[in-house]
Image: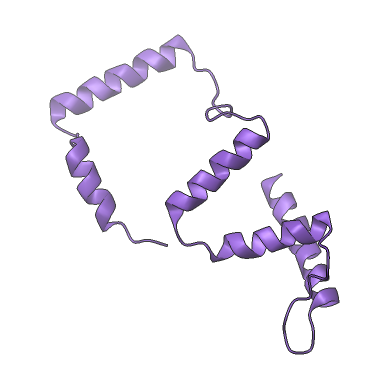
Length: 114
């Protein structure tokens, strides 16, 4: 489903660009943008954003405006799975296979920004 959405989006964007790009390479949005043009403008600008935190804020805003709440996509788990995860976590703790919040913050700082 995700792939189909983006494939259709790609074809729509390509058609729009072919139809509305001048010989100089500039996109002509016209005097007043219709809804499709507005969406393409947003996509164009979203693709330029490199700040992951900003993208998360934009995503949260869109989900809020569409009536979705964070966690809506979570599935309930069985008690068996729940208890199994607790046991796995306790075993990891006993092995010392954990890091502190401060260590995690320092590790995150080293991650390459893409």
